[in-house]
Length: 239
Image (tube, rainbow, N blue to C red):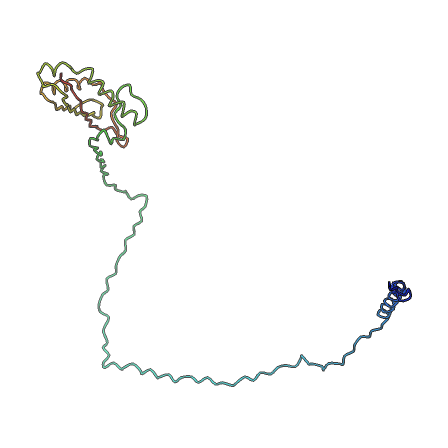
């Protein structure tokens, strides 16, 4: 058997009434809160404070006591006072004036000129010279001029030296070393030629060949022309 609910006990039928009652209560509470009166609080008078009253500070009274200074004893009395008569003459020092006038002749001592000794620059090695000697026809910077100089000296020696001389002297076959040294003087001339080889005739031939070198542009050290020492080895092949 199914239980049926009484329609009068269903609360959903009164939902609209409950909502209206709630709105009325909310409006009433709001109205009562707005209409409620408030009053300002009143406070009693504070005590009057006098800020003009001067504050008196008690200052202690002090007295400065000066220390007792010891008395300075009087200077001793001299035993005897001697009276010296003013009989000594005083020599006055006369200061001569150093000023001159137009009529006084001025004597000038002879001026000796001192010649400055010319700085002597010794011969410089070809490897460390600042400005190397220039072989005729060579151009470029310092490194290029140095390489060109050595190349042209070797070329000159190869062309001028008698290649048949070692064979004519009957030297043993093989490679023979020849050391050559000379100097390019301040004028660019080739001087002080020295040679060291396997035979005296070869040394004479080397000196003769080096004497045929052309005149160079002299080397310079610190801007001044100087003598430049140059040395180079050569190899001779004897068949």
